Image (tube, rainbow, N blue to C red; front, top):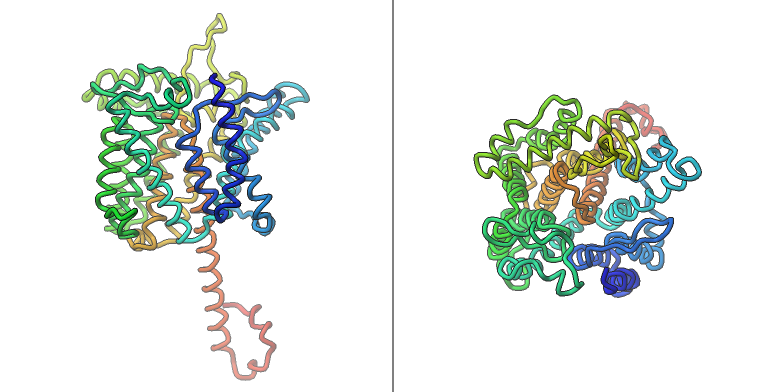
Length: 473
């Protein structure tokens, strides 16, 4: 690995801490994760006995250090809630898997604790930072605009690589992060910029497109940097189409269709149906009920090569699911014990989807907690923010972020591209929904108390005010 990679990752940590001295903490968190996600190298530093230092882990170390040094009071005042249980379970699931399999020294404690720390850095810290700082409609608007600006920044870089081939990561860091043959698509190039894969970039640009379209439609902003919102929307969406990531384009189309139809028909049930797609898919695949023949036939009508690739993915999923169900609760743990080997000990499977990897390593506990952590905020938003408000200037950003989180969960079915940006969305939506529901419950309780006082007989009017709090509403 080129020397610039570890130098960049290690230097990024104090730079992130510095952001907390130059900007308010919420803005520092947003800048740190967006910049790290968009521009840090695709590489890791390995440490003996500790989780590897990736670009997300480096950013999380800097963020938690910045919070401790600059804004410790906010962290001390934070009170976890029931909405955080899925993320907590997801971060602790590797420990349960290691203990149940007694992996390594100390019957799995050391191995499990190491993996938990890595899980916390990659998933827990971004989620916690969002729970701390993105707590209301205004903050969600700022988060959505941050994603949009990130997409805008990538537009010229994507166009350069579409024309010249994916070379920016090689120019800056001295190597290609993936096999170069995978970037050729439809007679041209699929850009990667500083992402792990063209698929990862495609999903990111689709996320930015969702935000651009819905914020323009809901009139959540008029212009940015002096450029009208409609031109920004057309530019971002156009670049997304040129990026040639068909799966991401399908998710983009589906998400926008869902937002427009659900809002205009005022049918929140459509959102619930969309949220149920991923859990239903996993249930059918684990129980060997559905084998994907219809999807394969549909893909073959467009591209036979893509259909064959999809068939291979589904066949590998079936093999890995059968292996995972030998230890269904906590899985097989790390170190490849969840893979399928032939009689010579050779690995004969390829694992692409995050869900099937999680099922093998952490069992149903891991899959359920991961799914709930990403989908629960969307369900809560339907309750906290009436769908009739999803296309208003105030509610538009929250609706767009929910759609982005949904396509990320769906993308984890065939892929395993990790990004802290989607965890910021999950944490931010959770904080907003929790505050909105608590405020609504308090208002309803106060109304019941007021009605109780109004209807009380005059002989009770001399009671102490606190006594009314115990009367039935």
